[in-house]
Length: 203
Image 1 (cartoon, rainbow, N blue to C red):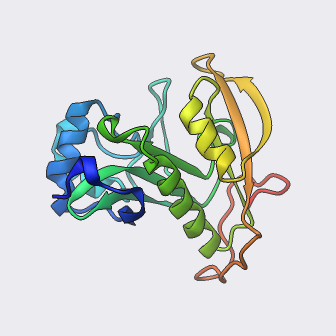
Image 2: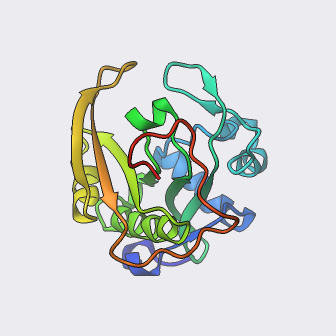
């Protein structure tokens, strides 16, 4: 396992969740990483949790305790060697809820590695992935008081659209759009990206 103290963000890559990373992932959960709501709870077993993350039939748990269907997308783990660093969700469609909170891209870094540039690295890799999928711009959201996330989004070119309270928690949420036109997009595999409940300008 790489030395966490010497680990450089540029070594981190997006990988699909895999068994080899489970020991490091379990350590991240013990540090306080909040598991993704799009998978089975880790208490059901880490292997079952891992398999469920990209299972389209596994419902997504919402903050209000309800469930909804999973939109098309890919759940990645940010990792270097056999060290789990964080999670990156790339969503290829937006629902009304995701338009207000969640957006196309979501990410989280394990508590022990925060503040070292891994969120910026994960976001850059996610934007490259979305560009390759054919998206021209993507929506990202963060709590207004989450200064590190806000700075990462703004460094990546995020343009603030609005700030409004979350309908469930009341927390202020900022919504940003990031344009991906700077680099020519590759043709998306199988045609155009799927859009649920499209809105003007949404990919």
